[in-house]
Length: 273
Length: 297
Image (cartoon, rainbow over all chains, first blue to last red; front, side):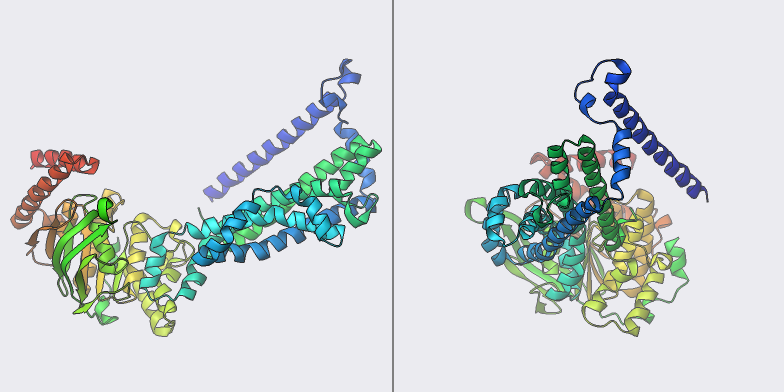
């Protein structure tokens, strides 16, 4: 009862702070952008950015625009397909590298040479390799998450406490049983961390890839949020540039929250800390 | 709290038929590395872990006791010499010799109950009998209300008790405990001694218990093995012929207990001085606290 009260007051205080933080940020932004009208001089940098009020009014008009939502949809699909592919291929690969010394010594050197190459350096090759532009973008997005996922899974599975293996083995566990009930659950927290870092990189990569490739098959204003920003820049709509940026922020945040939720579901023992 | 609960219950032997094993360690040497880099950790070590007795091994920190545990458990092989369990050489880890480690090795992703059931499930014995036994042991270690809690939600003492239960359900012939109560606060440590002692008295399972705490060693031991500094050898063996059941409240008031304690302390002091001369920080700490202890006595 008492704990609940404390928790509630704490919660409301953090919420309050979040509201204050965003409001102050918006007011400063508005003041900075309108410094020419209000104070008679243009503030450097921020003075050239459209104020939040006009961004909001342009945004309001965009809400009914299918092209804008099409950009959301395309970017989201590219992120998800690349990300899911990275998880599906990366998790087993990382586990296999952790479990088998032979497999690890064969794959790890090539893996380590490919890993430092920035995903965007793959763009030309990807365009040559894949038949459609859509696939090229998805592939580059996949690379963004793939290496991070593998390295996290590998590291997580490698750092399992020796005593867990020893106890399990002494209690009569078979190799497969140890893998299923020790290695797998012990690696889940690293998989969660790897996937949330990977998700962040995926958004970075997809936006850049869309700008470079010209937005894939959608064309026009339907080429993903990255292309949406680029197109707005070329078309001179500064408000839309800002809208595109904030949209990516919101989309990335939503994806992270979703992952946190899924991760929490798979790691109930960490929720109790 | 634990011991009060425990006193009212059916003894463990009513549920498990204890088959106590016997271990013989003869002329065991263990060294790591070879040639110039060879480091001898255990040197010509011989002792028995007697059937149905609680054998406590004590020695200065870093003297290679943990290495001996790894050898007895079968996680590592001795360089020379051999270790027998009931006359058969130990070749690897097995459920007949279970280890309770220094710090909790409970699986963090399993609840207390699932941790206890780990062994039976691993061997495909997840039947009613095993589940009944798990329930019984949960009661026995006073964790009935914490059955669906994760290890991180348990206190240090509860974790130790859960781990004891996890080992006991497999009914090992020899229990090996590696400083199991290290890191607990003084209060819960003494509670655990009484609790553990009663548990042992009930089952009389062969036990090999390693510690650095002299009071713990004395209170629990049937036989005390004092180890030398590294490379570790048996320095002395003392029979702690103090009748059971023992109670902590009056145990150290007895003459015999104090006599054994002073003998053990002076031997340990010699060993510690030796490793102190070798520059060991742990030994320096021991020498200091020993000086304080003997002033008080």
